Image: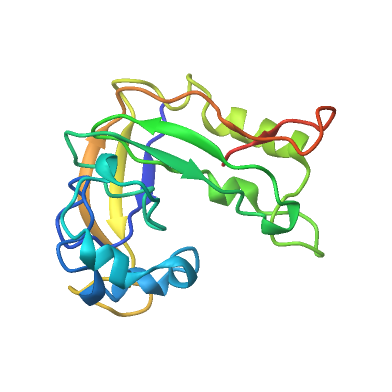
Length: 190
């Protein structure tokens, strides 16, 4: 069985070319996302407009996406999405024509008391299943890149616009957030 992926990209005014947007302060579409809005600094981004991510000495809150169609890679620092854990961040070298995606749908909790699955063992089990090389097959699986309703073409709830299709050539290694204590379990980056 071969599975294909869909991956949401944050709107980028320069085609996900590995650079900061040409007009960051005018890109209001990215601020729809909770993981960007509180961290976006339009003044700093405007001062570095059009610069390659690999040349910056700071992380953009949208940095998971802008290299999807870029001939240049860069290094990103990932922060734990479960802020209450306060796990140390981890760096990742993102090669050209790559992006960072997550199996978010696999990380929802089955319990009623939490949105996200918090058990590291269950997280790892789900990630191994999701990224199984017999399911996501190199040179066979496709990825469909889309933007949701946060885009200048059609900004309506429920809207999805396909912006690109690619073939999976490589899948990176599973990364782990740092540990607060050496005996803590591994906490997968998802």
